Length: 111
Image (tube, rainbow, N blue to C red):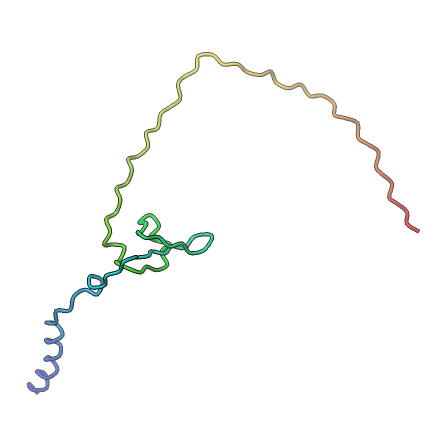
């Protein structure tokens, strides 16, 4: 029984000790492409857009997580408009009778 277990464990131990490098670190690509879905179709770029990562279709090159994420811009400062001491207001419109309605056009009789 011990021999059988040692024979079954040997491939697992050899596989665990293999020193294969990460496949993405070995691949050297001159022109990486990162493709994203949009309304008009699929558009590809040379660098990943982290803001559109949910719309990514595919990529050719290093994985997008190897690129540094850009810093978020600071939140916008919102300011109230300046107070106005006086303002002008147009007078309310006065309802006037509309133009008289035209008589309906009789239908054309065809023979």
